[in-house]
Length: 285
Length: 315
Image (cartoon, rainbow over all chains, first blue to last red; front, side, top):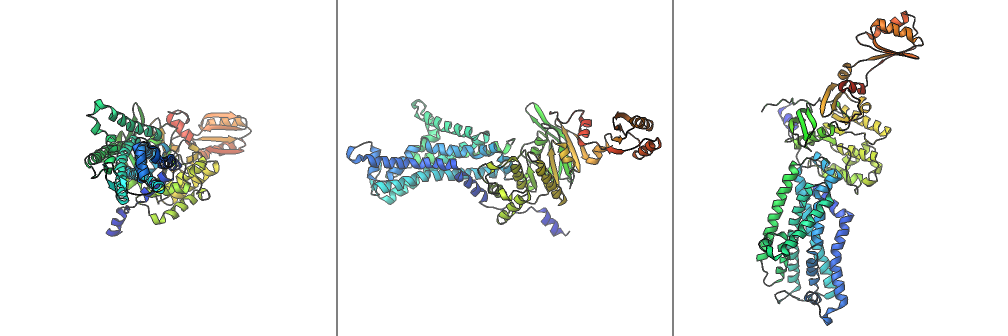
């Protein structure tokens, strides 16, 4: 055997950089009937909002401001649906996916086979979290998209009146909707990092999901207790409604920036916690 | 750093120990699986086999001791070593709503070293090898236990492997399936792979193993080539005859012990007596020898002699 042959024999085959694992992960998430049904529920809200408003024709009877706003411009269906799904539906969807991420594989026993391949524990978390972020984006944009289509179909797409009272074009309001969806996706992705961490603690995906929802709801409760106002800026959910600032003219960026920073810190802390947990965990299921 | 481990054998452990809270699951074991061996890793349920295998594969970390796997230290060398190992750990586990083929495609996709272009071909040939190609499109949840076990074995065959670590590979298989798996393992060994196969069914692996390690209550109570382990135990002879009393007397004169007569045959422990002397002496004494057999001890006998207990006693 020549020296070159020894070298070839000794050097490991090259590891490939490929999106196959991520695509397989996304296929499982978006191919699962439970998740498809859940996304159907998310999409149903803007449909219900649009149809109910249209049928009750509020332009004659008056009604809540937000309903009147819908009647004026279709895009408010999308904003309204996002606002309605913000406290529970969207966080619940992200909780279900992130709670299932590691605990689901542990529960099925597939985690041990992935790690024996070896898929790599850190790499597994990177793939899992990337899939969670993609799901958060998909879920948020689904609501926005269905809201836009329903709104434009039933109420048309004229100029929109912003919260600051000024009028803006359809293109500008669509851009503001995209920014709002991106902002909320970032917030839900931070929740997803909490979820992935919780998911490394247990082998029961449903238990993990419930725990994440509890964390989400608990933050909302703490945020509503005035005596705890010192705590509010540190709560992830405190900044979620700041997406309304994107509907002002000019856009108020202070809360948005603070909200993004908070989301980033939450995501980083819980990502590291998940990594620390999984990389030392005994996989005994 | 010097190490007690020799790097030549595919699997070597030194003082490998795992403690769960109060209980010691694996107690200072020194495994050595030689190159090319079919190593039967035996022991009753709960004796520490699966915990050992999980430590070998880097799924759980040892409390103490070291592991060398295909020349790499574990768990640091997991990435180098594990991709050359096909494994089956504590039964099959797959996504229930995916088909058998889709499940294998997912595991193949998770492998950094697998070639995407050959994925389909490799998956199909692995499925064919375990006789599951016809059911490849069925959902995993519709599979019988035997089919699930086959799919898990197919997963371990997706890539060429130097070492197979198979934990109870015949669990849930019918006799036909068990034979097929035995055949498959022999085939893999013939192609040059080293195989570690754990089982709580001694008779099942007895036929295919070259080496054996016996676990009992977390300890490795014996290890070595099967023939050596057998040599350490007593051999029994059995003579079929219609004159059992005369036969028993002759055997006693020859120096055999523990002579037991029953209608139609006599058994006795061989001891140091040369086998070839027995039949001529019986014939000289006019004892009709209708049948003669040397009963090799089964693995179960070996096990009982090592532990003083029956094999089915769970630790």
